[in-house]
Length: 190
Length: 190
DNA sequence: ATAGTTCTGAACCGATCGGTCCGGAATTTC
DNA sequence: GAAATTCCGGACCGATCGGTTCAGAACTAT
Image (cartoon, rainbow over all chains, first blue to last red; front, side, top):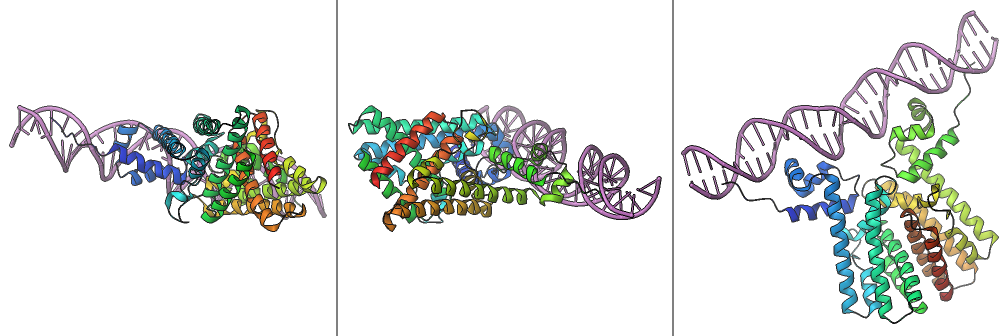
């Protein structure tokens, strides 16, 4: 019958995610996106609906990958080491790629608050899931439920701060020091 | 000779600052700004040059006020109490005004990274000044220079995380708990 | 009043925004 | 080959963006 070959939707989506991550939702224009995704305008609307729909998909995908990575590190290491590995995720050399784009969830939650609250709150909800994973992991270390709740909230504070540091493009070794000091004092509080 | 009455430039600027704070740079359109500032388009360009110029002015003003407030709390209280008061700044009831707009410096640093790096870095530099004030305050408590540097970096992490929590509109009592727990473990590390 | 100066509402500008549409090229089945 | 189907480049859409211009209202000093 007809031409079956489609462009690679997954690849296009991943490329879009990178652009949204780097530039944010508003500053990533349709033209930018199409160029990055290497597909035509028509294909874009056929495959993804509209810009906001694509972004939502990217946001959820980012959250899913983040949670997967977190659960991965938590399984294969003692909880606190795994946590630390998660915090150090994406600490490359300065100037290369994703390493100074921060966290899409944090970025979006801030950028879209007061602009598109549904997007902001969705990102925020994903962050809450991450915090819940922190808490579950702390509980497994055998500390009290109260302490697990309190400490996971502070860990989330530290994580957010660290992703801000990342997007501010502070030198990786500065960030490493921040992580090291932070975990030293968290460790002492356990 | 001529009509001397000017509109209140300071008032207009302050109103603009509030809008930028709430909505961010990109999402605050000229029309929005003019409506909020209650001045005409022509007066706007005569008095402020352009949107970016006005924003820069607001950003610096916000930083100045923030540093003033911080130095105020640090003078009138024991350093760590003053720090805590600074962290609790702007914790009103939920839903009222500035209390869930986060920090303009953090917001801007994230929003404009990769979009207008000059703006992002200027905000980041202001944040660095805040951290320097932390460090100076810690030194006055008599702790070692090394410890002051490390702890001020972690305090900045916590502050940034807290301002993210604020813009995420987490309940104020949740934020209060975060602050309380954070300072408990920082205190223990001193 | 009049002259002199500063104000501002509104019209206007080109550029870009996100989104739609269509005609022709590409690729398959028959 | 022809017919059927899906692809996509490019033209096009109204809306809005940030920014400019100007005529005339508003106000003061004389």
